[in-house]
Amino acid sequence: MGKYGDAAVRTVKYLSEHKQDSPNKAWDEVTIQIFGEGSSSQKKGCPKNTFLGLCEEGLLEGIPRGIYTNSKKNKGYGLKAVKILGKIDKDKDINQRVLWKEVIEDQDIKYNSQMDVVLALWREGMIRL
Image (cartoon, rainbow, N blue to C red; front, side, top):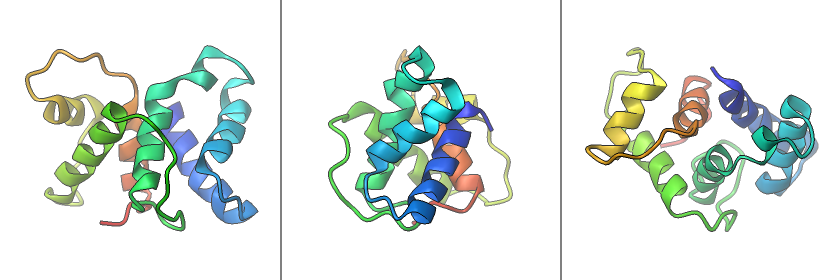
């Protein structure tokens, strides 16, 4: 699990432990702890919006559906990844790059840690199908 995957898992736990109702604020708090406040890694939008997109759809344990992001692309990548993961054997090990290639198909789109978020949450059993 990479740092953004760790951030996603820690954010779900943070929301549960602190009874925080804003996934956006919780992500910011956790990523400040991991990367440092205001750093480019802390501000990086692709993994954050992938996480928030999963939250919006009510796919994460303990986080209600809501409006958390304006991102269509990163939310879409996350949702497509979840669909793909839902069709494969839970014990099959799939890496970020392989999953990314399946998500984007033949498009030439740069990978930006979106699948780290999805796979970390998937492996921790935090995604509801």
